[in-house]
Image (cartoon, rainbow, N blue to C red; front, side, top):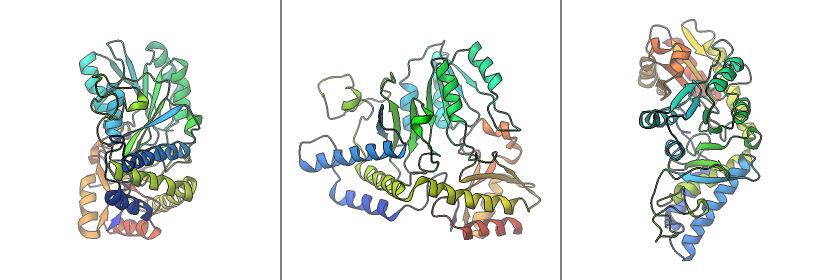
Length: 380
């Protein structure tokens, strides 16, 4: 199989990740922080090492803490459900947000009567319309702003720093969905200055499923959105302090987190910039080939704003039909449809094709993979 669905999950993991998961399953399958015995403490040490390595990868020296969750979706739910919300609360999102953001926000608006507003982006330039955005923020002051660092549909790198500056000027908190960026984009999270960053270990961080979470500014006044055992202060029915597990109820997935720690160490050794350059080279190769196929429409961010993702449609076909043919006749795996992104397809105008075909690469993708996809599309 030619695997080009790395935005869903990186299909190939570094050998060190596989070994770390295997070793943990054999020797560290214990309940971290739930016992005073040596192995339980070693599991805690692995978790803390992973936290520190993630902060290093994010270029964040201090002021944030890493909390682990089973998935980025659960992380976003924990954050959203832990916010103080009433009928006067104003949420802002971009047209590029995933349903991991949009569906919890929709549930909140139904319960509390809060408002969700979409920041304006130009379809021609892909950039934020700052004049219109300022008018919106002035008319309805923001409380919380959610922004994807990289669009999971188009690979567009959003102007996060600009949005953060605008939102902070009104006293709003900014939560960044970095599921498609952390480990793939050589970004300085401390410079971006958002209040929370959500990550998915199994995507661009090259870790296993079950390893995800969020980086939260220490001053962020977040309440727990999930409740349960933490191994600390067990006679207290209220959740303990953040340091004692306030945002990490339940048993930690130690094998997955050991795998994530190995993945982050691998990323630090290889270098995110090197990975980013490799992916950009492949996407440029794909784009050059697609531009020579007349019936293909592609949706490409401005120069310098793309990543390892490219979205396209084929005239005369629904996107799922293209995906089925690529799979059945050429053994090529791509993602088709709406990518759990409910707003962007109106913005792109791709509902006519039932969404897009999304090809996404990783460090382990090759030029041969791109050639195979292009050959298949020419045949189609």
